[in-house]
Amino acid sequence: LIIISADHCHIYVDKDVFLEDIPELAECLLRPPSIESRAISIFVKPGTGDKFREAFDRILGDEFILFSRQEIFDRQLFGPGQPHPKSLDFIGDFIAAAKSTSLLRYRIPDQKVNIKFLSHHAGLTAAEMYVPLILVEKH
Image (cartoon, rainbow, N blue to C red; front, side, top):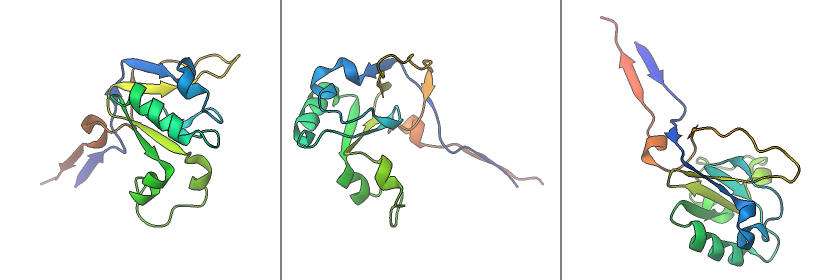
C-alpha cells in the first residue's frame, strides 16, 4: 500500500493587510505579531484588549476570525490535551485566522519587507483544511 498525503494545503492569496497601516490596531500592539500570516499571534498592550477586538472585528471581521487566547485553549484549536508549556510563550492575547484570501503582515521599521508569496496555508478555508489522501494498493 502506498500512502500519499500532505501536512497541509495551500491557497492563492491576493491581499496583504499590513497591521501597522491601521492606526486603531497598531496603537494596541505590544510587539510585532508572529507565527503565520494566516493564523497570526497578536499580543496587545495591557488594557487594550476590548478596544483591539472591537476595531479588528469592525475593520477586518469579513476576512479574519479573531480568537481570544482563552478561546484557543478552550476549543483546543492546537490539539487536545494539556498545552505544551512553551505554547504559552507564543500564543498571544489573540489569534487572527483567515477565512478569506487575505493575510496579515507587519513591517518592522528599517527592515526590508519579506518576499511576497502567492500561496499560503494555515487559514480556515476549506481548501486549506482538507488535506488530500491518496491510497494506492499494489495488486
